Every structure is written in C-alpha cells, then in structure tokens.
Amino acid sequence: MWHYVDGNGQAARVSDEEARRLCVGGAIGPSTLVWQEGMADWAPAGSLPAFASSFAGAKPPPPVPARVLPASSSSSFAPGSDNETTLQVLTHVLGLFTGFIGPLIVLLSSKNETTKQHARRALNWQISLILYLVASFVLVFVIIGIFTLMAVIVLDLIFCIMATVKSGNRELWTYPMTIPFVKD
Image (cartoon, rainbow, N blue to C red; front, top):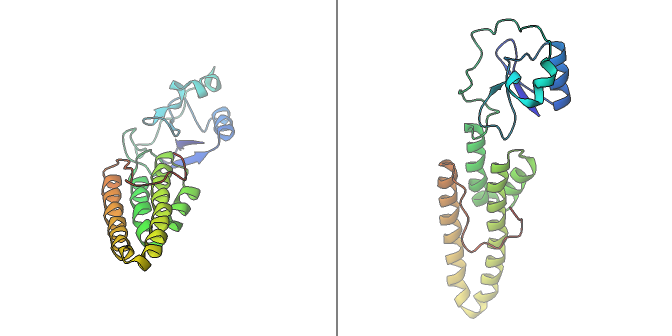
C-alpha cells in the first residue's frame, strides 16, 4: 500500500497496482510525495526505485499547491504517528478493563507492526494473568491463595500502568512473569 499527497493537498491511500496506474495517468508525478510502511519519511515518487520506470520520458508535473503537507509533518498514515501511539496506549489500558479481549481485538485489527507487538505483549500478559488467577483461586482452599490472589490483582494493575506509560513514551515494554503464548 502506498500513500500519496494528491493535487488538493490531501493524503490518499492506494494499492501498489493503483499507484502505478496513477503514475502512468499523471496523477502521481516524480515530485509527488509518497510514503509506504517501513519508510522513515515521505519522499518524492521520482526518487524511489518502485516508481522510477513509470516516469521515463514523462512530462513535468503541474505545480504543487501551497497547501501540501511538508515531508516532515505528521499524518495519520505516518509511522509512529499520534494515532498509532494512542492505539498502543489504549491496548494496555484495555487489558485492565476487558482482560484479553481488548488486546486481541487490537492485534487482529491493526496493520501497524509496532501496535501489533504491543497487543501481543498485552495479550500474553492477560492470558498469563488468567492462569495465575485460576491457580490462586484453587489455593484459596489452602488459605495462601487469598494472598496470591490479591498479589496477582495488584501486579496486573501495576504492570498495565507501567506498560501504558512506556507505550506513551513510544517504548515497547515486556511484562514480567509472562508466558509467551503469542510470539512476537
């Protein structure tokens, strides 16, 4: 998938095949800003090997309107954008309120690999937590389970808060005592 800035200064998302068609049709020119996941920043299409053959012998593009976003500006499509960071933070908060369901939904619905890593770590912790809670419940009949049950609940709160803060700082944090059910 490619993202490009159209003639109206709006970002649009297209498939690789559609991007090539837009190059041939002239909607994407050599100076059109494009971005794809894995790229550090937006770049002119003519500077990328994926588009180089599409512009051989092409006429120069029309002038770009002044409203076009500069290459360094934040966009909802850019890696590490505020939207992705918010979703990463939300993944860990959802673990507190929905158990494994929230991180699982984020894992299945997100296309950003970093967000998926956060979701996998939160999901692994929530599944491990369920096992620890079941073990503590069984131990309640031997009295010690009351203490382990309280400890596990407090650890869940602490770990989810720590993961939330770390993800807000764009850091990937590994929950301690986690059994890796879903691999990174």
